[in-house]
Image 1 (cartoon, helix red, strand yellow):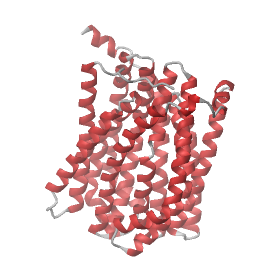
Image 2 (image 1 turned 135 degrees about the horizontal axis):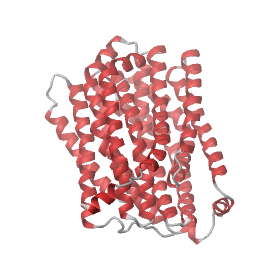
Image 3 (image 1 turned 90 degrees about the vertical axis):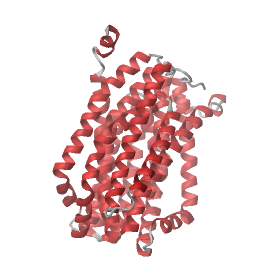
Image 4 (image 1 turned 120 degrees about the horizontal axis):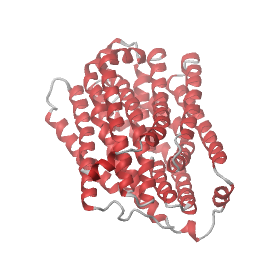
Length: 454
């Protein structure tokens, strides 16, 4: 009893909040880009362009989310290295991540020409939608180097316990994107292509801001370390980065396979449902990025505590983040239940699309609360470097999603069944990771293979 009381006494709530609030604002700014695209097209274009952006955004999300290990992997490795007081190792991890980001960017730009039209052909039976979606996606991919390098820089910031600079970066991206969206889509009538061009310009500007902020943050010693790109210390030591990123990549691949199925299946129901699901996805993303703020706080604190070999500090950090994470999920759920129709009305004035979105809204409203534990434990396992558990939990949850969808596949409401299965999937993610957290704690293996070496 005394041990439990000591564990919860004086929890680092302030530290968690100081990390979480900039991350929450930063994360919410990310889907605002998609919300602005959707709103502009929903009011100043048509179902064709709105549906095309939904498909294009799904493919781009797959590309960039699959490579999000550049951010999460960098955060974990940098956080644990700096928690152990080894800035030189943190710099080497970041340099390797930069080289990996450049290589992946080059690969994306080279292979996108033949791959994008083929993928769009698989995702939709509508030829016109596929063609516009291909154009949108090809334009957006021109920002791949900027997006991936920004992920690395953001990983350094969060691993260093700084979530304010990432907020400044995404604020610049969101502001520029809003202004250019209004100009290109509402003003010039360029449709999906205009929305894509606006985002590309905004994302390159975001990289410039992130690099400038890093330069101001880094002292002379770290700048000198970064300037050294040669030596055995950089040529070796890739196993930690690649091994961890492999598991994160596979876990994200499964996640995006499920999300892609949700979007693509909507296109096979009808073009109206595809457009409606594009709006519902934006609501889902808005909530998920907002909830991810305390996950980022848990990730940063977990990395530091594991680096310092302080398991008790890890548990205290998780305890400090848990209640606010659940509360944020509950707030989003209540907001969507009460004001969901208003949100949908803001995003589109197309009557059939509005009706289809309202029909599935109750299940979308449940998602934030059902997903709260999943986001929190994602941060804990990313920060601690125990990403193998995340891969296993995601695989089990995807199987549960497939079973839930199949059992309800004969219903008269196929889109409602789709979103119900998706809510079950997200609840299963949190439940499986919660069991993994308990297993790690009972076995006393939080520090096992937690450290990396140059």
